[in-house]
Image (cartoon, rainbow, N blue to C red):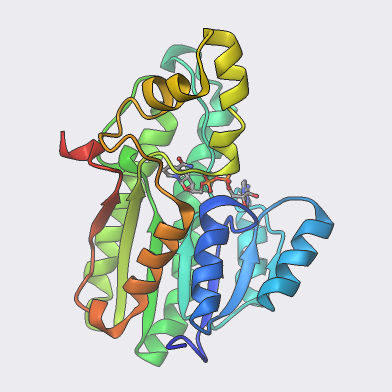
Length: 251
Ligand code: NAD
């Protein structure tokens, strides 16, 4: 329970990776603030489970980010995790989707960070953890906005790491490959039908084609990594881009 007395805000934590990170930080005693969309009853149940507060702020909206940060001030651990994807050839890429992905996957982290940093500096302790992606290090076709935003957040991470290096605040990003979240799981039946493949073929030859271990990253593994980055033993892990992608970016 080494995080007792610390407050953690995890964006995009009503499902998937963000929720797993929230659970892992809560298990170490952190007071947790959840953010994200979803069914009101399910979110209320998560708040009960974790003794957490919830902000429904839309992080593509600067005013809503500012209101969230004003309401949940004094954040010691900030996890910028909310993100979205859109797949399209660049010449057809919907302009509003480009703007939204850059706003959510990159610009939101600038705003939450600039608003959280004064308290962290004042305390002389803080942790900023950004969920980037294997796509912060490498590209795939048809994901221009996502790849640009994820490369961007890797650069923002390094810049904050340098600026805050002497303030007791570390900034790192974690870069998963394919993670077993409901988002991925729900694609399998349709892909089996569309391609005439078995479940195993879809998993190995489509989803995990780039992941050498042929295993999905589990959200709880990312939760464990986030916990490690909060430890005193990780005080010199700063500005890192920590891959958890089964070897994808080693190729
Ligand atoms: P998810 O869809 O399960 O969760 C996304 C979360 O973001 C949800 O809580 C959702 O409500 C929230 N959200 C969406 N739009 C929002 C908005 N406008 N404002 C506030 N919250 C919003 O996705 P996930 O798979 O858990 O992904 C989380 C992060 O991990 C993303 O940044 C994603 O790019 C990254 N990532 C995921 C994978 C993967 O394979 N799943 C791989 C690499 C990186």
